[in-house]
Image 1 (cartoon, rainbow, N blue to C red):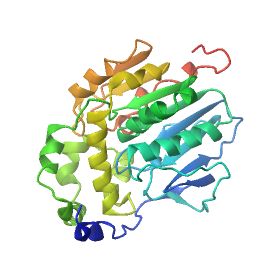
Image 2 (cartoon, rainbow, N blue to C red):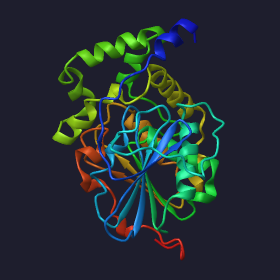
Image 3 (cartoon, rainbow, N blue to C red):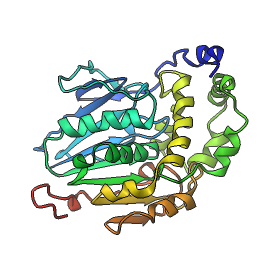
Length: 309
């Protein structure tokens, strides 16, 4: 990438969205992990991994039970979407050797969180879109951590899959130097002009979260690197990564204009029979925001002691 393009791309983007948060926020490398306070005794742990241009608030309303210990990733070079909490550096943090803003880097953040933070033995790791790839990469890097963990891959970026043709058509003519200009253009347009096409039918929560997509990262370079890395990761990653998952669910939307639904299903079908493929009626890529009803019940979480779901 040309130096002049990099200079344009590293200009900071101001944070435009945050929510009140009660709990601890730990800095891990160039990302973070937030642990929400829970009012009841924790019976299960859910770790949420947000998608491209999203933030961890994607999961907060889906897992509100007072007995759920909710741990939320903030991927590298993304803004931490919390108010009123000072991030701390945990003693268990170890340096990450991968390039930041890649799936490989963020998988290291996830694995450090999974290895050190859950206080229950019933664990779900739920990733949306790019977050699904981060989980699969985490499994590939440290399969032993996932032996008794349930994995939920929601409208996920998968090995040997691809972007939706609409997205590819939009991205093909965009050079690195055009990104800051293109994002300014998108941000100045009312979201209604493109929202319905890519986001499907809107509701208040979807509108609240999806209207701030292009201010989720700390700079434009992260956006470019995320996109290039997503495409490269899908192409080079074999589907045999699924073999290290014992408990898993693919949530597939009825309509997806971000990722290619057919390629997603084809990749998911290469997984072992222990993984369920649920074709939901969700009208968009954002299944959890469309309706919480498609999220599998936490009652089915495996018990680490017995290994039985």
